[in-house]
Length: 131
Image (cartoon, rainbow, N blue to C red; front, side):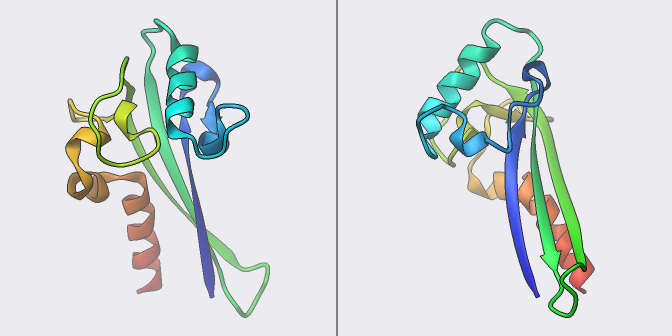
């Protein structure tokens, strides 16, 4: 058996961008978090619709049948802040404020983030399935 995952940040005001291109959102860069955040903040501008969600999907492929795979999805809803806040984490963490919190993922710290994140939710579904 084998599994793989990917995560994207989806912003409805931007038609779902950056989505699957989250790591390469800023043209000409590859995994440049600062450039990606700056592009996202610039594209949102002064918009008041700052809703966003992180989505992780894990695909589990079973070794006995190439066509046999199962998907596990984890989503965490939130908003995009108007400026970077905090220093922990990576990617868009300094500008993503999860629903129910007043601080960004980068401010909350890894223990809290890992407990409520999109990845944690997808992995929990995978673990339950494997039991």
